[in-house]
Image (tube, rainbow, N blue to C red):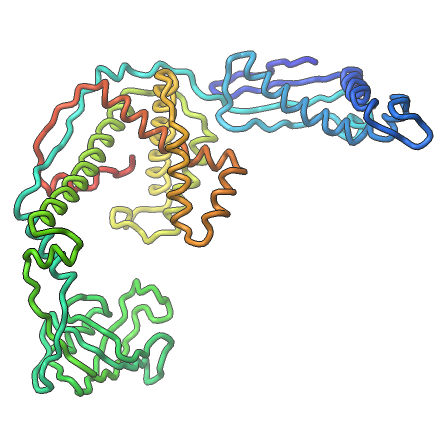
Length: 443
């Protein structure tokens, strides 16, 4: 077997592999000799059938398996012997007529071409200086959250039939919607509850019902938003014939021990303590998001090396599919497709670069993801698909690549933890508003 490096330009490598027909035949004969003692054919005692006869019976099928195995082994050997790691799985390009190879009439000859992962020296993470934003939980934040809890427990009592509805009231309504005098699908409802001022209906709908009384008929005129999810209704004018069945007014909910008991807690202090813990947990996650973004920015700025084009292309394709499937971002308005593609390709390059840097740092530090963390993530994913938990877990058990995809973000977070533990991190007090700004961007 001969493996010859034909070209090495940048990250691209091309090898030529040649396996003589005689070597293939030797492997076939050896394989047939192994199975000889287990085969019993008509006219021969068990284990006594000659190899020449077995070759006629099983030669082609077995040679096909040998060729597939050899291609895999020689491809891996071509890179491993030179301490190279392919960026993506290499694909062979055969020069031989494979029918002749399998028939034992020709040598196996093929080229294998692939990009390799770049070799680079990651920065010393101990030299990183990072700022960790922290925010205190203010009493007013707790009070706002308490009020939201109280609002969620709001009950409603019927107003007198002579009383007009007000903002915050709950109405029970029957309605029929028409466009150009014709009813449309989804435009009819009976005893539908609506809270005035909640903005859950089409813009302008609730406002026109403010001041209505129980038993009153109201004509509501609205225009469906241009981005309405039902495309056949988007931007169209509609008239709804509405009958107000009942008007209920909200009853005040006291923020006291009784409210806490409704939530399964002992008293108001316990409820306030639980709310404070939840807010602190939210702040901690937001703070980590900012810290991680700062860390990634510094890692990106500190490393400059060639990137495998295939990896960048794959990452860009994934990003671009998401862009095409989503509504256009305000920041992207007015830009040409070429401008947008250029920007998103830069994002793809950043992601690939950071992925390689984090992977190399994690490799050198021997960062591991415990199996129990992977199992926990599998279970969490399964819970997201009620009724299909068993099938999803079986899918992961039978698909190592899927497990690896699940493991990748867990590995990244552990590498980030490793870096943060060694970097110089300074706490800095920040406002709630600053902390709640989106730290992710294009990370």
